[in-house]
Amino acid sequence: MKVALLVLSCGILSTNASPHPAKDALKRLQKSIPKDVVKWTEHVLANSQKKEAGKPHILVMGDSWADVVGGGGSVGESFLMRRLKAHNCSATSSCIAIPGTESSFWASAPGLKAVKLGAKTADYVYIMLVGNDALDLMPDCAHKEKKSAAECGDELMAKAMKNMLLIVDAIHEANPKARVVGFGYDTMFGARGCGLITHDIFPQCWSSSAPKGEGNRCFNTQFLRIQEMWENLASNRSFVDKASILGATQVAGGDKKASTDPNNRHIDMDAMGPGKYWPVSMECFHPSVDNCGTEVDDCGATVVMEEFHKSYWSKQSAVCPSTESSVIV
Image (tube, rainbow, N blue to C red):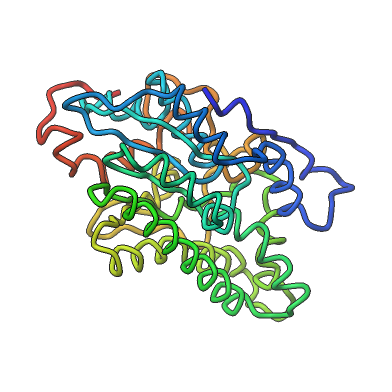
């Protein structure tokens, strides 16, 4: 599976840690970005699973998060495809996600050209983006621009929304029949030491002037605005669908203050995602891929993709049947 290409490190736990562990984590991921994204995309697609008659094709694109759950689809091994198959769903998939990329990368001229190449034969385009935008932009917004957490959140959303509109519109131009779907990650960063990254992204939440004991709530309030971005995209583009997996890992970890009830979905705003599912070995913001056993809640990648199925794919009759007879494990 493509998750092997992630350059992961436990350096954020070092006592001599960099003043900007969030940016450092991003730089490690960006080492894998190809110099020519168009040629790279052409190569990947040429060696990926092709669309088959009678089966919808899913294109996965975006950042390392997308690569972790969607990579390997060319041989039917991605976590996304595993969960779909477990529910007797039928589709083919390909993945052009690139670790370390931000929304601005895919909204550039070369990025848009690559997106269009992948979208031509896709029935669905699943996008994961903007997490890296936060890692890159928010520390400077806080330290150099001296803005509040809310003001920095506004800045992040304004830039991301502009880029995302360019991306989804390019997909629609290349293939008007394709449905575009995405969600705002889940709450992450719960492993010991991961607070160094959250404190770097939105340091204002733990400043001396911030309400004591509300740092996690402040951080979650701003970071989870990425979910609101998808709701706005869906409201402004008829070919874009919103989905949500919020609360998935907290619920799997036993947090009673979180819920994945579609009528009352919410996270525990005062907590992060369980460390079991967001380990330091995965930079704190990728779902765990180790110890993925027979149970859905054994690792983070299966937890989040199971919730994705429940919230979105189960409602796509072209992909998943309306009733299931299999025993899901």
